[in-house]
Image (cartoon, rainbow, N blue to C red; front, side, top):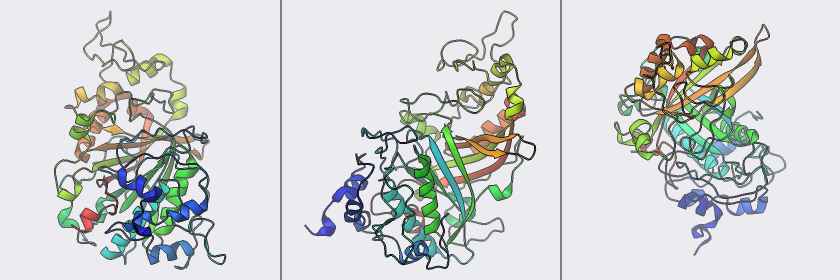
Length: 463
């Protein structure tokens, strides 16, 4: 067996889909020994492209300082600052990309990018190959290249920025998405010859009640969602992928998030949002494959998109100070659930199905028809459900001293139209809308996962 044929730790993790156990402080010699295993398979570049390496080394004129479904790791190791196991590792390759049904991690860094005006289809392919290679390494807790942060030449910037060294994978998932402008611009330009294979379902969202959209904080040709249980691991992923893309992409906007606002696995407890409410009680779960097929995964359209999903990403500002002055009884009525337990006001426990027909001694419905639960429940929206995966954010304060805070809402559905229907029903008279203001709104198509030896988007760009 030749050296290239030997499986090695990278090959085992990436090729078999197993969740592996690794020391959070793997030494650089081990990282170097396994560095290029991911690139050995046919169709996948061996390591980063020359252009990607030049971007990391500053050779393009600037030094920037800047998966599979729901695999559950069994590794135990020193706890990370994010509260999870530092050695927790999810496979990068698989039928679906990680970061959708994966048990929601505690931290997120999201970024959207525009491609340069002179970027060609070949440049785009090379970029996605580079990003796939680097992401598959970082998902295993390795640096973006074999040389990493400490093994390069002394007279060049290191390939990897190094701030995540020793922190382990920390459950990192990296999810890539395509904006509608990648297929056709607002002016109708088909820059990459992709307009003919854009799914007919790939539509923009209509303007909705409570929308105060900032265009500079919305949209983009490409997006990356990095989630981990340590904030530095998530930031490290976006920082280094941004560096690799220099000269081909520019960062359009980004958002940091903390404290997941939903559960994507039955093994997780329901978290609370910044209004103090249990959030996402009725969320879809990884353990519901039939409901995921019916609501999340794309099952119709061009062959390259099947098994993917649509991501709705909306930055929703919450009027924290106003909400804090609302009496508890009214907070419960607005939501339709008991704030303490999360149980519907019609009675029962947190996961008891709401009974919208139940009435109190006065004959009035126990759950107000204008409550958030009533307006968004699948029962009142033609059975439409979504997989939510949002995060809290606090971006300091505004000019009058109020918290600039809220929910970075992320949801996955099989078509954007399904979200629009639910939100239109919600915006009609949902009492919750009074306390919300949406400042950013984007739709991205998340392509299906890829096998070892492929790159994200390969079935689109090389059918």
